[in-house]
Length: 402
Figure 1 (tube, helix red, strand yellow):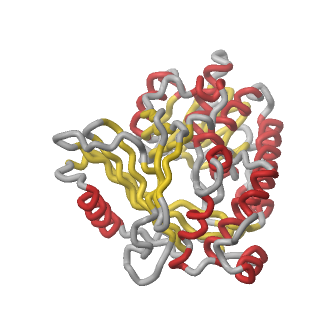
Figure 2 (figure 1 turned 120 degrees about the vertical axis):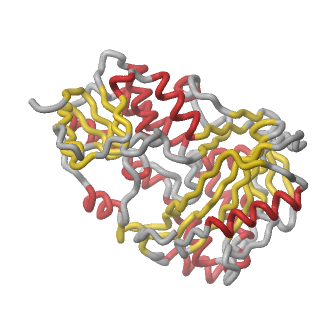
Figure 3 (figure 1 turned 60 degrees about the vertical axis):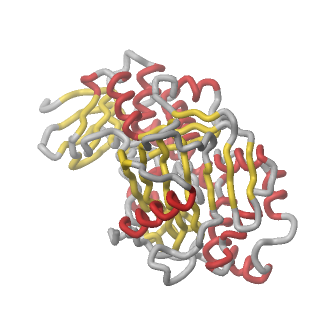
């Protein structure tokens, strides 16, 4: 046979694929696997953050080997009408540290980086160079493809990491400063916008400009200038940029999940990560979901490829059903609120109890939580809310326009 043989081939070395590989290696060190990544680094160019309460003991154990920034004295949010300090712990992991840890924790022979894949099938993977990697099971955790079957808008961001020549004085993360101007970078219409600020060290800050919009356009230069303006306004001066990230993430408000899956399904191949439907439809807050899924897949790693694919698909179907509330709120954001008043939806939400907010981000919202979210004075006109909840939204055809 031409090429290698392995038990499990994982295609895509982002957060989902990397954690699956690590969970698999820790639970079953005897299993041979290949983690195949097309880029030059695992994890791409991202930063993932989560609340300290999001993960189980097993989930925290999975992340023990990663260098993370941790804040145990709470975080802050700010809106046009109020400011709130929260008590929950907060964590953050950069893709640079993600890549370094996986290279250290996983066997060298299991990593295939800067390695493009030409074809996936239930019995293995064919690489771009023609090499064949035969496998008992194949897991596809590549990025989300364009799809007319998914509906919604976009979360657009640019983040910059600065180092200063003196302490900046900020001790807590500001995970949502929506007191800023609510216009898009081009300034021609409004969108829900906020700044995200992480004090990564006494002399280092990560500043990110994020906004939600129907239009999939990222103007990195404009967002970068707005970060400079915000930094100057807050007194964070003379910083030297030492890192940067950018992205356009889908905000899923509806669609036909079965049709989406059928359009990209490869018989007998499991689909994980956002490609498989494992994401937070509204916030793109992925760490708790990725950790839970990695541990679940590792616990069923001895299944045959088709049975593993079925197991993962059933998990995806369950996840799609339980995240319907987040898609409904996404429709409220894009279809019910006037663009300049979209901030009111999050402003009302952040008046709710802290533990409810944490469960919301981790996709663990309970029935009582849903009742609390939808009761009280609505942040949008009731007639518009009803129309929004009944609407279909816009197709997420993801042309590269940035």
